[in-house]
Length: 166
Image (cartoon, rainbow, N blue to C red; front, side, top):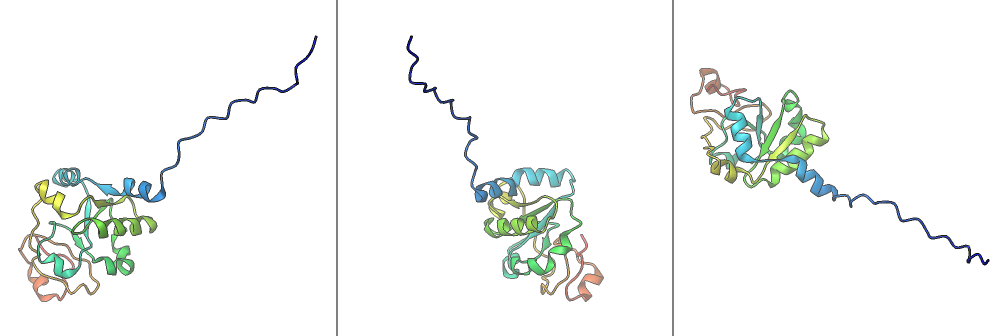
């Protein structure tokens, strides 16, 4: 009886995992928030901090009520003002700068920073009407929030109010 050549069939290759998604795509997938969902959550009273990262001149066109206003160029020196937030949703005009802000805040290990997908356009489409900022801040370093145009006496005497009364 002859024995063959002794060659054994090779075992099948191990099952491979699907290719990993590029880091940039994975980062975008986990850092964007839908405007309709964010608006519904805020309307329901959930503690979501909105962060407007637009430049001061852009905020004259309106801001989302209750938003904290820190322009993107100042975020690196002022990000610690946001550490107590349960969740932060950054927004800008079109969503590009807010993606950068959310990525930066993730690097700083803040809890769940995201970017409002598409910026203010989808927010308005979801029924979110921007309000006029009651007073423009010189962006000199204090945290302030946009609210309805009712301003407290303390806010009127402050060059950059800590909070505008609503």
